[in-house]
Image (cartoon, rainbow, N blue to C red; front, side, top):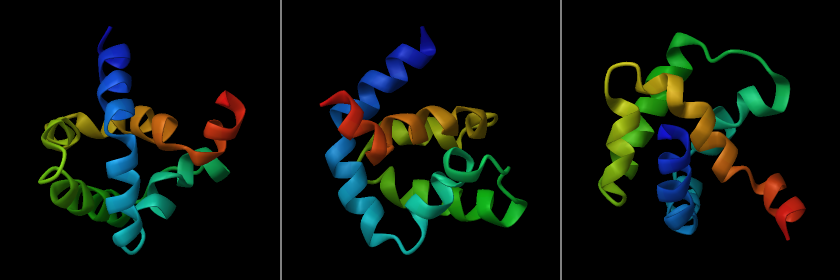
Length: 91
C-alpha cells in the first residue's frame, strides 16, 4: 500500500524530479547505482543522496519522506520509478 502510494506520487512529479535531478551533479548516478550494478550505497553516497533530496524536496515536498528516519529504505522505490530504461519498456 505504501509502495503504491509512493509510486503514484513520484510518477505524478517524475518529469520535474528528473529535470531538477539532472541539474544536481551526481544525483541520478548515485541513485541508480543499486539498479545498475547491484552494489550497496556507501555512507558518503547516502549523505549526498540526502543532500540532493533536501534540495529536491523544495520543489516536490513529499520527497521529504525519504529524509525521515528509515526513509533510505524507500529509495529503491524512487529509483524504480525514475529509471529511464523502464520508460522505454512501458511505451
